Image 1 (tube, rainbow over the protein chains, first blue to last red):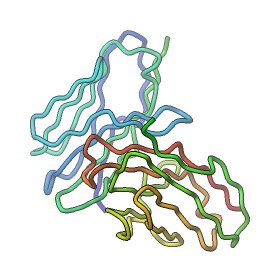
Image 2 (image 1 turned 90 degrees about the vertical axis):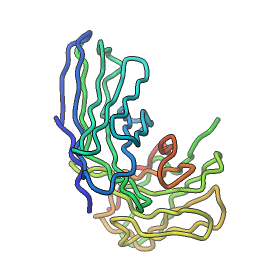
Image 3 (image 1 turned 120 degrees about the vertical axis):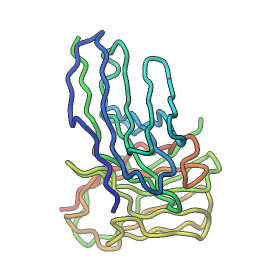
Image 4 (image 1 turned 45 degrees about the vertical axis):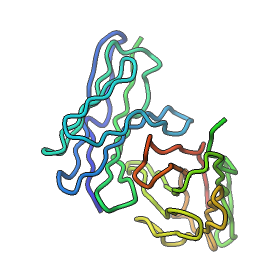
Length: 112
Length: 114
């Protein structure tokens, strides 16, 4: 079973501050890295699917970078808002496989 | 509206009583999958299907069955549920096993086996 690690496990951030967190994954056999946003009592929603080393994707105030050679991805949130409170999941797909392996998530709480 | 529909949302059952959790998607996705979520653990894959009549085991398939007779439906069957199958279950689908634009998840089924 592949090892996908996310840090920190939880994070409290003041409204208006920027923040970031990490996803680490195996650097061999890379195919794709997914980020999902999971609000309490809802289902995970896809944020980004990244496939190329050096990829940087952006959606509003949220962006992500990818380093496949060293096996990590960062998710950044600029100017945090209360609606950003959620658990952020990353998931790794290795080449030749058909299943995503999920990390345990970073639980983000924005303090008004 | 493009969606994955899971039913029921909540279910309490007794040990050994067969149950089925339904999953249906309206996006013509080839790939469908079942995951379970337990505290402190990431989403773990139970079974997946690359297309009609093609199913494969994920990481935790014991105690579960699936079928894919039609493209849109992928039910999860627990023939003889046990308390260790108490969990939050998600169905997901995508155009490709590689995820395409990401998986679309159903709303989840919280199962309690007593």
